[in-house]
Amino acid sequence: MLLHIGLDDTDSPSGGCTTYIAARLVERLLALGGRFIDYPNLLRLNPNVPWKTRGNGAICLRLDIDPRNEVQVKRVVIELVEAYSEFDCANTNPGAVFLVGDVPDSLIKFSKRVVTSVVSLEDAFRLIDETGAFALGYKNMRGIIGSLAAVGGLRHGDHTFEFLAYRELESCGTLRVVDADSVRMMDEETRGSTFNNLDPETGRVLIAPHGPDPVLFGVRGESPEAVYRAGLMVSSESIERWTIFRTNQGTDAHLQIHDCLSELEPYSPATVHGEVVEVPQTIQGGHVVFSLEDDTAVIDCAAYEPSGSFRDTVRSLIPGDEVTVSGGVRGNPVGWRLTLNLEKLEVRELTRDVRLVNPVCPNCEGGMESMGRGKGFRCRRCGFRDGELEKRRIEMERTLTSGLYLPPPRAQRHLTKPLQRYGKEKHGPIERGIVELWHWP
Image 1: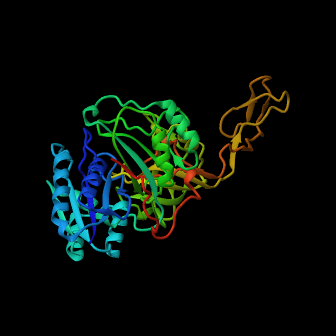
Image 2 (image 1 turned 90 degrees about the horizontal axis):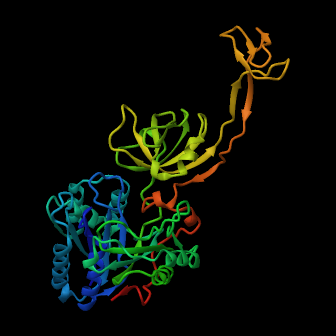
Image 3 (image 1 turned 180 degrees about the vertical axis):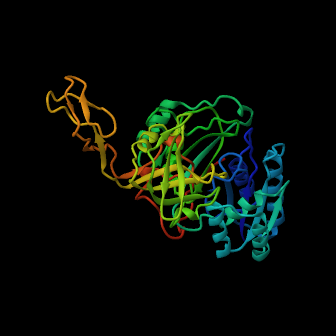
């Protein structure tokens, strides 16, 4: 019997991890005779919803089981969800979904909606009834939405892999020990097949999180073989277990292309085209903001301080530049404008930077200053005056060039597709099997 098990919303800012529950379930379900038909799926959901806990990731386990073991399998899943969920957190609302048989198209479409927009719990309940799935929710039951989306996710198209290593639980909350030199060596050895291991601007190691959760480190890449090889190259503190996940990370799966700015909605990720209408301004905190318009609306676009040198690219824009912007729409408009938090910027067409400047003194070639509106100019150096002189037009050289620009890896979201992944996208249905070594123990 083919069984899909979806899990979501078990963690909190102070601990827990849905992927860790999945990793423990792998061991328990194999002991019950389950045969996995896919790697555990890690589906990152819409990163802009205000009620997410940390990375907003949901899990689906897909396996063949003996129908006689169905009740026992469900019992084990529920046991581990209840044992490892962060129920004390007000924003943690675990959910689990069980679906027998093939995944229907309606569930695949629902999954895409959950990744790209905001979906109601009522929509999830309606689909559960239609598909005959079994759902279990705790507290306000919002985790059922992500659990159901995970069951319908990653059925075709682009995907990546992640080797996730977990620390001993008694170590959670202490400083992680991951050898930076081994990460640098791993990055050099696997370059092109793994991504976002290090931040090139700061040299910072990016594979290890900083919170109190049980994840020790995670290596992302293009294939299970690549992340397996890379994961075993990292020197670290004691590892309790590790598992390879198939995921939508690094695929831009959350970004929906919109025809016009007026289609944008709060909390939704989007890609949209427009023209810069104001010189970018640096505001308090080091954030850079500019206005973008098309025939339907005007919005603000913001590059925040953690995005580092990406802000210099944004500062180089001038009114008239045509750009395509991608990112998440803030929930509350500032005044009457929506704000899009930039995740990437594509410069499509640069306008000429033509400026009016004061004339050069015809007597000594010194700089001149205005004597007042319509009164001409006076040379600062020799005092020459001419009431007929006017400002001259000069074209400034643009340092910015057309192309795609992203923040450095340290400021990228889980779903953002890194530059090195362009041209490596996977297409079509998932047809490959599972490699022999995809989890331990």
